[in-house]
Image 1: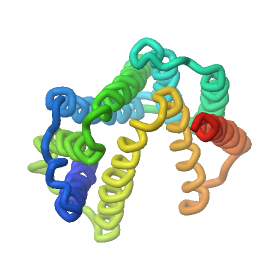
Image 2: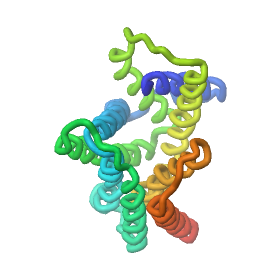
Image 3: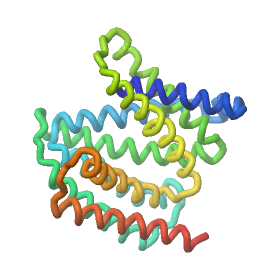
Image 4: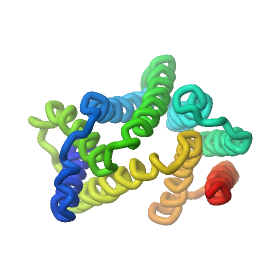
Length: 254
């Protein structure tokens, strides 16, 4: 289904560029190899994360994968020449602690090898960190629409051979969900993320990314009626606090 949502996203982004008269954004830009490689890396990140979920308890796979912001914060001074802020370390510790608490509720065991699962999760974290650094470089002179379009197009192209001859049995409600996933969660959300990467420090982007599992927990409560334990509430509070610290720091620096 990742292929379907990617294909829908590609069509959406192409329609946006055509409808707004931004035909120049179809040009691949000055870094074609790096741009296309970033799309392949995004696909690899998704595959590695899914493989980690197949081999580890959900909480463990998510927690290890979300070590990526730690890598980003520690490597940013070397790769991007960003000064590592004391506030970043504090917010990172809070967010990582919150993520650890939330992961305690994901106790469903994986069916495969724990060693393989840990390897997949660590590689997923490394691929996420590398992708963020590539995005920071691309966004120095490449429009957000161009980056998002080609990343998603490469993702769909890589997955096409695995999906071309399969019979997808999807209900009308399922197709509606896929359309929402493609338009909102892949196309629009991806575009906003790539747009913001240029304006936010890499070490801050990583911390804000911890809001994703926290909001997923909230949506589970609101839309699916899932019950939250004290670990979820405490972990979510720590993550939101860390995000608020980063946002406050950004506002004060303007």
